Amino acid sequence: MGALPVFRWRLAPDGYATRRQLRARGLRPGGQDVAAQLQRPRRRRPPLVAYLYRVDLAKPVRPMTDAKRAALAKANRARRTCPACRRDAGYVIPAALGTCVPCAYPEPSQALRSA
Image 1 (cartoon, rainbow, N blue to C red):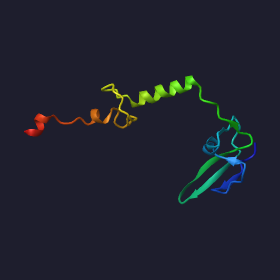
Image 2: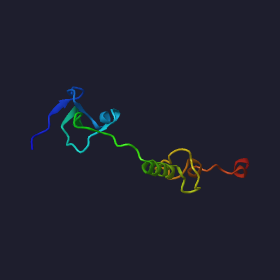
Image 3: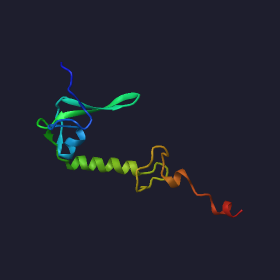
Image 4: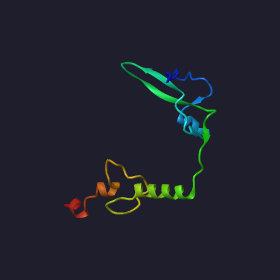
């Protein structure tokens, strides 16, 4: 097994792409191994590394099926549902709070405010 070719940041030759770049083109790595890597040097820290795949070996992205679409919608709905009040918050519940904002920070009652 040989070492991977290493390119400097932004200096990779044509024909190589990261996963995100492949996805933007409607492609996926398709089981191929990493073909090369990019390295971005940083001061006093290890370099940032990005893995590159060959574009000519990439395969088209699989189309979304109805079952996958339904499962994704169900998962996103679960992320928006508050476990305390069981309502759809309309946004993804922050993991730090664990509940929707009104449940996490309830308004003080009007009686306490007027006293």
